[in-house]
Amino acid sequence: MFAVVRTGGKQYRVAAGDKIAVEKLAGEAGDTITLGDVLLAGEGETLADAKSVTVSAEIIAQAKSEKVIVFKKRRRHNYRRKNGHRQQMTLLRITAVGAGEAKPAKKAAAKKTKTEAAEAAASAE
Image (cartoon, one colour):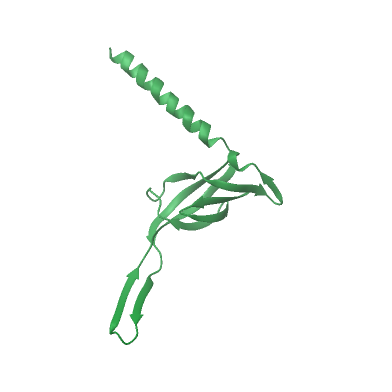
């Protein structure tokens, strides 16, 4: 199964086992994240409902991309500026692309924590 996800203002076509480099995401190497903005999903030539598809990924490393040289020059004015830039990026390994209800699960987890907090307050009294 494949999916098209959006992160960092760019779109990526991913499948299980793929490695991609995206703009910096929060997390350490070894953490598992869920890419939530799924635009399209399918298997072969058939398309699936993108709202019900979740994409899980593991962070391989936090790194910097290749250096980009920015050089500005104005002829006959003795004006030259040279700067370098290395963009922060995150290397991801896609672990799973499949049907799963990610959004309702988060809401259920939030409700669960509220009830646990109420139980903890009741047991403290």
